[in-house]
Amino acid sequence: MMTCTEFRALLTDHHGNELLAEVRAQFDFHKTDCTHCGYFLDSFTVTVKLSRRLPRAMPPGLEERLRAGVTKALAEPGERPT
Amino acid sequence: MTVTPPPTQETPDLRPGLAPDTPVTPELVFREYAPRIYHIARRMLGNDADAEDVTQDVLVQVIRKLDTFRGDSQITTWLHRVTVNAALAYRQKRANRQKRETHDADTDTLEASDGPVSRWNVGPDEPVLAAEQTAVIEDAIGHLPPPFRDVYVLADVEGLPNQEIADMLGLSVPAVKSRLHRARLRMRDALAPHFEGGLAP
Image: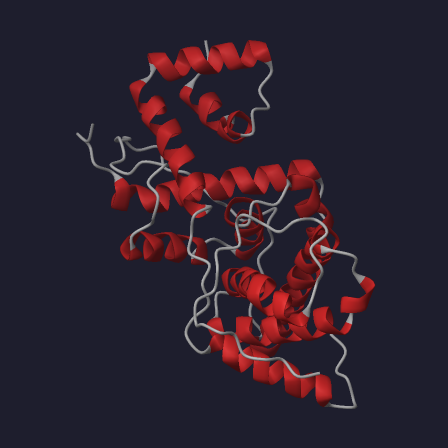
């Protein structure tokens, strides 16, 4: 019988679809059997999915500053190693 | 080399990616790669101004080497590596300057709560994050200890594979997975008070 601690330790492996069949069966049984762990799994999954959907636009004005800064850096003879 | 300004202020979503053989031009670098570089650096460093410095340095490196790349698929892996290296170097310099104690991931503790769990009232498939939700998630990422934040940003925000992250950070894949798991638990706990809806359907 899988415990709640064991269940939560496997969440990332479950998310990556990396559980072995036997472990997965125990995992799925516990998920159904334990309401709190079922909610925990759902919220864990939502956390990962929401993070993947964070906005990607740059702040206003940043692109223009970067273009100006890069143009200036490329025009300088003494290139700064990074 | 002169970099011309964009026709609009909007930066397109980068998720769909580009065709592998897309020619890499300076304009493409600014349009497609600059936001990605900036957000990785910003989240790793937790500071907008530092991220701007790192982004500019990386963009200069990318544009200087444009002729050596055959297409988008080749440049993106290199770009991630250069960005992560630049951000880590910047963080190290900053830590030295401020004589700040650095985190040791092996001894850092990230305990997940054992308290009661409620159902969340947000679905993973809602198309757009509200500004308030975005702020909560960004704040939670910013409060992760750096070694965990790095892995979380690269894996769950940027969607990079564990092997690529391991190569970039000089870690084993199991170490990446361990840090990622602990970071996800911490993130879940940080978001829970904001997203728990109890009786939501």
